[in-house]
Image (cartoon, rainbow, N blue to C red):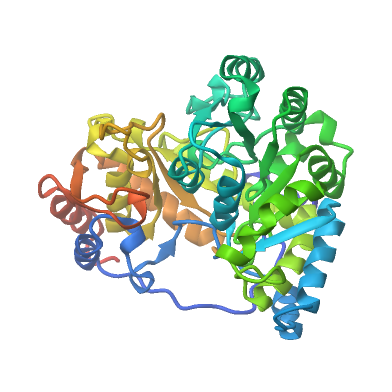
Length: 483
């Protein structure tokens, strides 16, 4: 990775290792209009219209800036329904980067999860994972399975010096398998970059140990590699055993060790699609029938062929440390700046985005007040910035209808790769700081329309009082006629 030091150390900042060649105009609405747009969106940042958003930090899924080579590759796409050369080129890229023999396409990551659930999860079985992801859990419970989370205790501590807070607790994993009986475990899933606890990475050593436990007990090991790009950066920077390994070495080692690897190419590959890979033909055959049933023919699986070409290029670019470093170093810069302002952050900085500890930011609100969702609404009002709630709103209710409170109440500020400038990140930090200084004005939210499944995507909430109007009034008092 390029090491660039500034002559004046006090001016040291992350350096973009790319140049911008296409731009998109942004709009920043007045604060009064932002309040109205938040009301229209039911206090759910997912329901905001992008034209009304200044900085879209909702996600990095499918919104990363593609490289010039990716865009160029889209022009040679072969849209033949069968025997497509585009499919062959993607397969070749997967073989080069992961070293795998077999590949199944799907339209995106959650489609891969659906296939895995249909193929391997039976009613009454258990899926063990370091930590769940929303759609993963929904697919597993939909077919009658249950999820057990086995992340080590450091993973649930907002601030902890552990460099790999996403690691499995191996003794607990072994004990749970023993208690359940291996035949009742559908599979063990490793999420390489734990989304819901701050994008915290998993060490290579821990993944290898999990795979060994699975092998010993005759249980499938499955790697969700959607956030593997950031995770590999942390392996290279924080894990001694990876120091002298290339990115390709790490990817091949993981694919050789795991029974199945899948990922959302909206993240890994910087395009739009989903991929399941394995070196085990029997497992591929067990999943294969679900691709034409749910996705499309085996040459495209619901993906648009131009995206498949871009994924092939994006995977090869993932082997470049100068490329995969860009997300983590800018996220770390934002986390450090907010931390210096006193804003409670998840530390150390992980992948995907900067994560604000909304529970500590708003200690006057309980889990039942949905503090992460309230903070998300408040940040849009304060700066036209759209983050994503990663707290209780993102959970699903218990079978008896009671609320399942999340272990952490987080507001994620995703940093899509090669999208924002440093000045925009500094604007974000400034507006979060102002909000932190005025946090007592932020009140609770309550459900107005609550869907039964994945409610955070399209549910609607409302404030319990007029706190949003008071927040806008304070903004106007402090900033005058500024946007």
